[in-house]
Length: 287
Image (tube, rainbow, N blue to C red; front, side, top):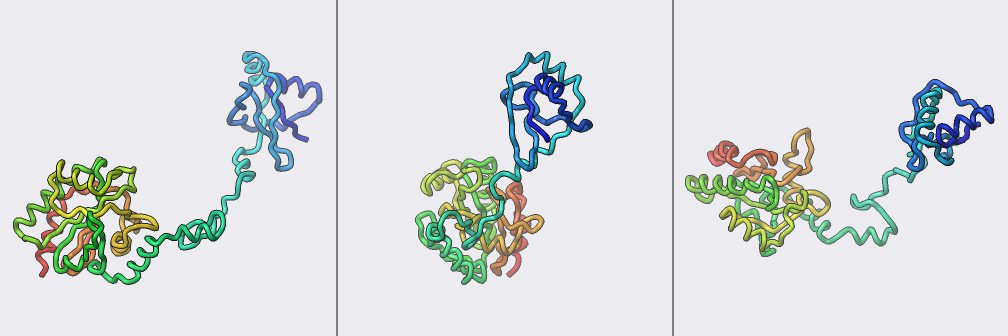
């Protein structure tokens, strides 16, 4: 029979009095209890975990006793996890975890999610989408047919926010040579570190005052998750990232759309806008 013992000094006395011998030859427990400085915290009896405490002896006596005792084996404390709550995955409804009653969860399937699903089902290309501008009005991307478009998810309080300056310079430099054949579309997003907390008006003012942004900044939106903008859902499907991962990793990822409406490239946040001039010009050269 295995019992639970308290401080090491008391345990030694208990062993001598009862004749109880533990099997030697294995490591000491990995931690002590919060109540005493030298307790053996747990032992297993038929799958149940118990912990008993006795009054602490002076630290010097306990330390000396521990040093004199052989090492005993106790089961891995990872076993404790088997006594915790079930880790089985919850059932899903429309990719939403089912918690509570079905009626409550059904209400979590919002109109916005249904709109996203419908838009994805009906879209066959870039020009089929109609994202919202800063005033909440639809912008048919069909208006950009035959043009080269750079789509960027942006934020105002990010370490990459200075890329606004690079995007504006890139936009103006190419526009001088190619007119309206090149467009940059910025999509503010607050999903990465909460770095776009302001309203749409705040975002517009920030971009113009700090970086003189003249390309269109759309309405703040989500780019990942159930409420993701349908355009970004499509972009991720068309051009997955490194190792096939579709999820957008951070602010200022970039997608290049060619004149034919197809995704030609995807670049991470660390890619500076000015380095994209070459692939953009290559797409502009295609008629």
